[in-house]
Length: 251
Image 1 (cartoon, rainbow, N blue to C red):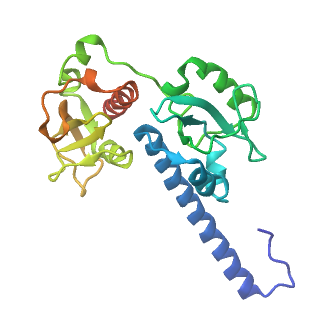
Image 2: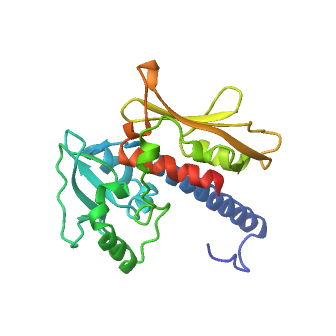
């Protein structure tokens, strides 16, 4: 916004500057919230039809700024990746070789998780670096973690029990898609395949969000009580994200 000129009405100019500052802060807040929602969508496997993708992201003046900083993928009817692409500056779509991609109107589209392009991750990282694309959240460089066999075959992760954490970190996980239980002594999240991971701790306090806490249990259960479950039941994306969030809690 240009500085008020000497010939401008001082009162109106001051009001305009205040309004501009408020709008700028509001936009920054919205962008932060939408970036968080897109990260949750990536982890949860949210998909959009091609028309909805264009309407919600490409044709939206604000969401477009986020969309062009992310890597996307098209998926077939089995939810298998067909192609990965990035929205280019001219609103076309470019593949790993910078060739134009035509989207199949029948395909579904989602924010690509690193597991979707694991074989090409280094090359995509180079593309984003070369174009100086700053991502709104870790995606191309996101950690990919796997469960050791000894943990995968169990229903509990005992190595996290007794580890120190903090209430504010528990709150961050709630913003990432985890849900507090009724008495705030645990978080849970349902993953594809009907599996729920539960993280227990002594208790989150809204009156003292920085209070230290301690993990008391981590387990996976079958949704709706449909039988026993182990961490091997989680798909690679779910397993990686669970471990990533647990490591964040105890870091």
